[in-house]
Image (cartoon, rainbow, N blue to C red):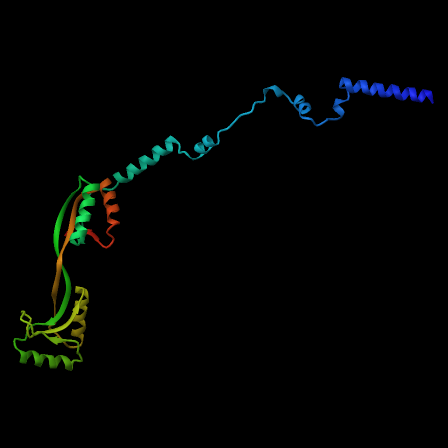
Length: 235
């Protein structure tokens, strides 16, 4: 029994000695940070690097100098590719609109040449039969028109050159008036004509010469503020 106790004590002392010398270190790890670091390869060369989030964001969003130069060159090229147009007309403006348009044009394109043109805009068109010369002749013609089944008319009795003529309709556009003339002819009434019934107040159109490049781009932007105005070739 004493021998057994002796050998157990001897083994315990031997195990304690081996632990102190580190002979049993490969068999287990205590999990503590100093122990793990001491076992890393070249642990003394590990460095902590601090990264600035603002610089990372700027680096991710700022365009490269080459890309910015390319975009600028493309913009200049697109303006240069717009060949000058000999003459472009835009209108018809009221007096107040004309002042506003010419002001923007002078401000944004000071070197662009333009000419202001006054226009008399037709307000309406009348389909009519010319004067019959007397009331009796006009009444007789009116009876003939009724017999053709046409009832939308009246005898003109003012002091104009059309007195004792017959009005067969008032139309906003010349195209609509011409269609009425054709329709009346199909129903057997010939000799109808189209004339201007009234003229509106003067309108203004602008003719722009040799417009191209940056001037054309500026004009297109100004035009957005005047959506109802027609752009056309100069007459």
